Length: 506
Image (cartoon, rainbow, N blue to C red; front, side):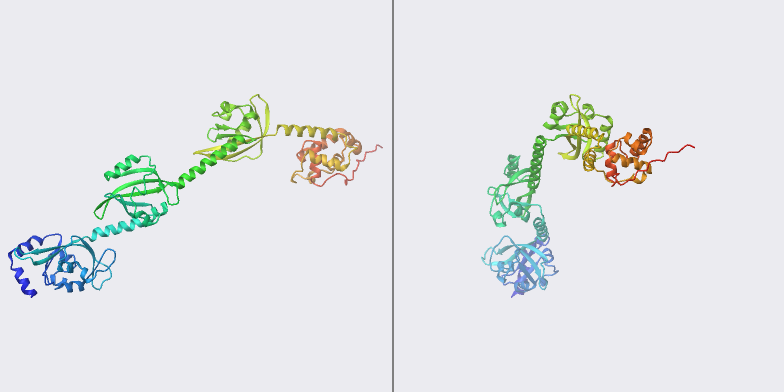
């Protein structure tokens, strides 16, 4: 029956003409007899199945189904009645069915076919003369779409796609879901009116116009609403794309919220620094490392120096003449240029009224915005030094006659005048025997005349010994040399003083 039908169709002039028309088409064409026999296929249809002749497709619909396994794009395998070739035999008319085609015995599909049906009838007979499957190989397109889908989902940059026809979201990746704090079904059931991607955009009207026209939306900042409430600052941009033959808009995002939080934290930190700087009871100033220009001074600095902020800001320290000496200025500038911080550096500065102020200076390199600056701190020690000087003079006046002081009081006075230095060379071993005798008597509180009488030597000799003791100990005052000796465990009490023997004349 199938052979007779095929012979009849083959000898029909119309069929010959039809075959001549379709043989060179890019689309695949398979002719099927109503009795389910496969009659003919053009070269494109054979190539789309990886065969060279019609018999390799199968003589019948059943054989075709056994040689090629079909499933939908959602990985659902087609049942026998759902095969396009079965549906066309059953008289079903369909315009577009997309299936993946796998050769029997293989695991992965080789092609993706887009199939439509056609039923041809004789003019005088309502029954179909033969049935036609028209096939397009859309493997390349769907492979590209698969690659895009994989890339889209794997891309950590947040992205969402809306269909321009109804502005409904059709695809969303994990990056956007995490950014907005939404679930996938909360996005794919919404439109751009429900989830406004352009909220607070700086050029919102332009973006809406470009979206309506399906044109590129340039990058702009916007506020994206998030699930937990509030918004996140983002950069959003739109790029028109075609997806499954539909015009769409791909929106991509860059999360600026960490940057905004960092900027807010920096601004808060700078405001806190400014308030602390202005309220600090210690005189402080901020200057550039390059050029040593003053950028800011606090109220304590103005009170200390007499310079108002308007008089001193923007001027180099050299022009102001803040430092008492050029050597001090040069050393401080050299050290700050090298990035060396100062701690407790003692220096004298000139106030506006030419008063000399003794200060302890400290510096620290700080970053203000894009600039590297130097923070200066000045502690006024003028009064403290004056008090120390008065105390030293009083102690020295008392030490001129110490015969009525106890040894413990003398020790305390010595330590008060000069704190115990760290023991280092030179030491007591550098003194001669006579110098040690003189030092012992100095420690006992004797003046030069008493020492001269005790040692039975001239006063000039004592002064020479004292001068050499000063030179070897590195001090220049009597009370300081006592402190130097006691720091080394020498109090003079245990030293036996030997008087020099006078020569007798014959």
